Structure formats: structure tokens, C-alpha cells
Length: 161
Image (tube, rainbow, N blue to C red; front, top):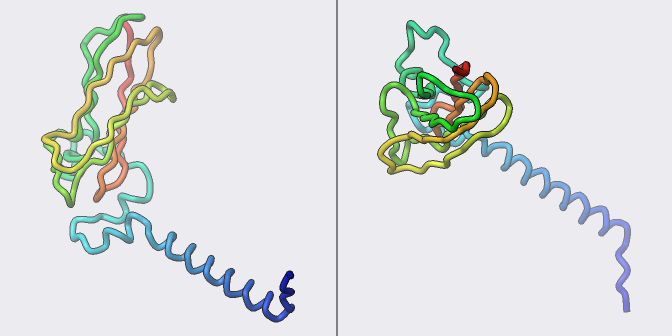
């Protein structure tokens, strides 16, 4: 036999279920990277608001020197020939300890993904080498994500020989 539920029980259960969903959504929203990192003294919360780039290449701050990706390519690149692109995180070696590390490095050729490397704490260096072949000039975009200092980006225009 089916048990019928009365209207009062139905409404009570519906309200309780909706309240549970609201509490769950609030818990998820509170789990933002910046909120998780409030206990760390080094966290600069403004760095998590967008993509960070070097403001003045001639006067880089310490954070910029340690986080802005450095793109290394050969002096001459020929159309249709493979070449190496080396991405390093910063001009100064970035720490890769448990509390402060680079989570990933990625490369885009124009708007197309060209490579991505997931990293973990304990590695010696935040560096990756990808191989590309292009047939026309392109902008290389390097991005890296630091768990304490957010997303960083550098660009390099590639001209062909």
C-alpha cells in the first residue's frame, strides 16, 4: 500500500531540503582560493582578481620577477620547422614547497592550446619545454598559476625567418 503524505509534511520536508541546498551552496562559495589562504601571511588577495602581468618591464617588482613566465625560443624560427619553447616561472627561481608552489604552466600559440604541464610541490624547478611548428607569425602566450599569487601571463611575438 502506498502511504499518502499530507500537505503539511510535504511543505515541511521541502523547506528543510531547500535549506540544506542553500547551506551546501554557501559552503561551496566560501571555499574560494583566497578564503582558503587567509592564514598565509604571503597571500596578496588582489593577485587573485584577474590575470597578472608585468606592469613595467624595466622596473619589475620582486613578485613579478618571481612569477611572470619567461618564454625562451631560438633566435631564428622557420615556417614549417619544429622549434623548442621553454617556459620558466620567473627570472628568480620560484619555490616549490608544500605551502607555496606553481600548480601548472601552459602555452598558447595565438588562441590555440599548445601545451600544459601540471606541477606539484617538491619539484626542483617550475619549467617546461614544448615543441611547436608554425607557418605564420604568432603570439606565444605563457601562463602559470601560483597557489599564493594567482594567475600570471607573459606574451612574445614570433616572427619567422
